[in-house]
Amino acid sequence: MSSTSAPFGFRPSYHNSGQMRPKAYTIASTYAANIFQGDPVKLVDAGTVQLGTSDGTRSGTVAGITLLGIFAGCQYLDASGKPTISPFWPTGTTGTEIIAWVYDDPETLFDAQYTNPGTPGTTTMQTAVGEECDWVVASPGGSTSTGLSTTQLGVIEATSGQFQITGFANNINDSITDAYIVAMCRINEHAYKAAVNSI
Image 1 (cartoon, helix red, strand yellow):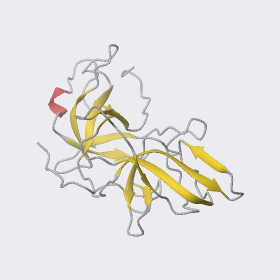
Image 2: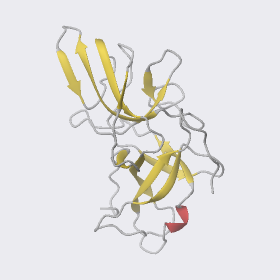
Image 3: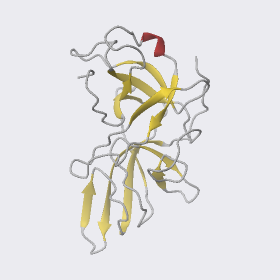
Image 4: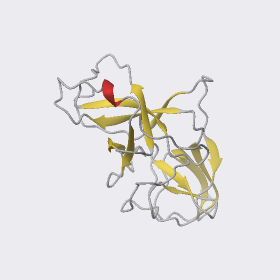
């Protein structure tokens, strides 16, 4: 429910085509950061995927970082040659034939939890539609049991943010005045599309 702080990362929820498909990229072997399903990721000069922060770690910053998309999971051959499919990239993994699945279509919309900055129960979040936010780099950032991210949208930015709120999830138990509303958003600062300024 949106009255409880329970971030779940960025979950694909809508595309005009009716289809949401992740694309195959790769991660450098021994890359030393967990990437959980639902985490924003970036593409680096080496052509590999990293966590979408300034330095690719959970201690990095996010402001102004252009995102590739949202991580959906990975597969690889581990150090012993065993095929492995995982909803998250375990930090420091040594592997070959690494495939990182990423929702990279700039038209895909995602659901993510957003903290109502007003008075929960009375402050409507309708005015947030069209506004922009960066994402919050949670620590440890997710569950190594489920592989799911615990990241969420940050505060509304004055100019341009990594995500733009396009509406709110229509869940029967949610209200637009909830303390931890589930917002629908798109990636604004996207590697494959020009960003727009906050409305």
